[in-house]
Length: 364
Ligand SMILES: Nc1ncnc2c1ncn2[C@@H]1O[C@H](COP(=O)(O)OP(=O)(O)OP(=O)(O)O)[C@@H](O)[C@H]1O
Image 1 (cartoon, protein in one colour):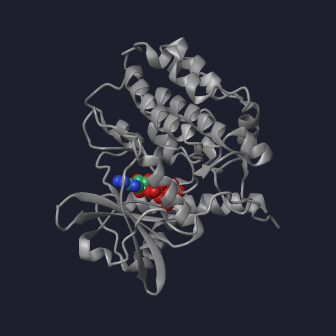
Image 2: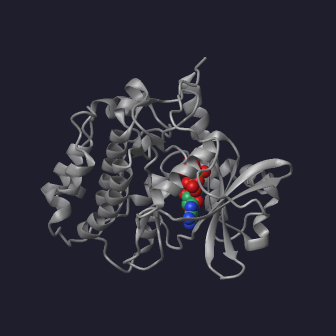
């Protein structure tokens, strides 16, 4: 049976900033509309009663890990416009369960990949992809300079301020973030999302800043062609064949989609998807790479394959369990999820739970 090997170097038992102990509903009107849901909880729309500011509210059960998330997120977002801002933190009880409530700026543009899928009117180009990557790189640069690894870089955690084409992209979800180096992966927790997992995690359960670079390489690859460099065939979450490909860095740039992409972009991806984390390009190397510093091509990229990244695997099973999952979400914390995103959110929650089950099984 696997054990939790993680050690905590910093003390996250108490907050190094003032939290609110009064009931959040004194200050915020909470909407039943969900903006999203993840493994740790749901994110709801809310509005500040006095100022009318629209915000996002994430509710998580109180624990050291939850406190670590909030402390690192708050620390990371200070002085960085590419990280979702934490506006307020509450400690409240729901049905005698202690919860932490994180009020964040509301990222009204939603998740990056959904936005790219929706911009049918406007061609999406390599230059657009470079603009997005630069914002991600700047967020990660800020974190790495503070000796924080995010460890969960994936499209669901990359959110846009609004629906316009010049919206700012920001990084959120510090649920797996860690200060310091080389923490062993807690084996009982599925800390990785298959598409984005770095080889060293599969090899050694070592999980530090270099894994953020790998995950950014995967995101950059998808942003330039619409599909991931590593994926499983036959509906598995992560097959052993896919694991082997990640471990050996075995991926291609198929000519059909990559013919028109610059050689600078491909070479940057190759340096990010370098299997040995010691040889892998660092954040400083990416920031000075010619692909980001020089003007890139404005030739349109066909992103028709992008929806497959979300739906390729286990969609049928997710749809089948969505009804049950929706009910479980609705029961939890007495909040009824509604809004246009509700069904997509329920499907994703079902898919994530399946992923967790598979990953847990494999680790035991
Ligand atoms: N500030 C925000 N504004 C708008 N939507 C948000 C915001 N924060 C989170 N979301 C939405 O809620 C989803 C879940 O949030 P988050 O990733 O923080 O939760 P989680 O439980 O830690 O997720 P995960 O399963 O990825 O670990 C996001 O993918 C996003 O769609």
